[in-house]
Image 1: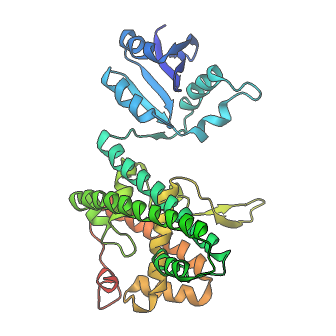
Image 2 (image 1 turned 180 degrees about the vertical axis):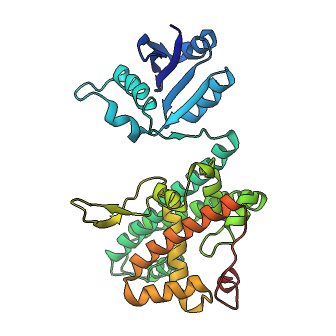
Image 3 (image 1 turned 30 degrees about the vertical axis):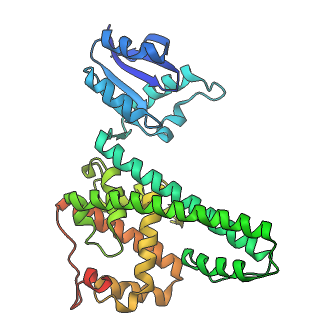
Length: 347
């Protein structure tokens, strides 16, 4: 019998092949160097190739698809239960990939295009620079505190803090130079962040789906661009709750004996999208008194009964479901229950 499915465990230099036939019997087990991989699949008859959706998987999916093979990507957490206990190695991983792909309930991850990965690179670079900027700001504040100098929170308050450092004669010159060097680095990072955000906003303005998403209160061009670049096919999510669950914005269940117990959100899926949605929801909740729509009324009522942070996460869940509806129906957001559109109120 011929090979019908190949489980491919990818790595930087060494790749493991686990091939099975239609009956699920092993036809081939082989280790390949990176330079041998393409030539192997060029000689191999067209079949289904399954890989974990991890680093470089989307690249190899595009390469192998170009060679005539049908490529499927599977989430690593779906493969883990099929790895034999105590036998964690490349061969076992490749076999587990085949076993997981044969399971009837498995869900596959669509491969991303070059354009999508290019936009995601912009988002990843921006996220890294923002993180570094925050680290530098915290370091500057911590060092200044050692000399009794403090200012209110906010990246914009660093200028005020540096003025205090420069004018305080008790601060040693060596400390002043060190803090100034860190402050100069924050300026360089701010310029880099600004340049990346300009490219991201340009992508959001020229993408039809991103423009629809940007009409949702609390979702700006950066969040809209990231969602569009990450979600390859929205039809894979059958309901709005499925999309919110994929983002980790639904409660974790601890149910047994017919009793349903809900805990904190699962925090699975794309962490960056979830973070941006929660930040957008926080902004909207903080100005809920000016939000003249049904969603604004719901937010104000929730704030009267629940803690602020809980309401922001619940609102982020609602925003994710609205995003699913707009992408599925190809519509724009229309506020209900208010005289002024919510998007206009925010502006």
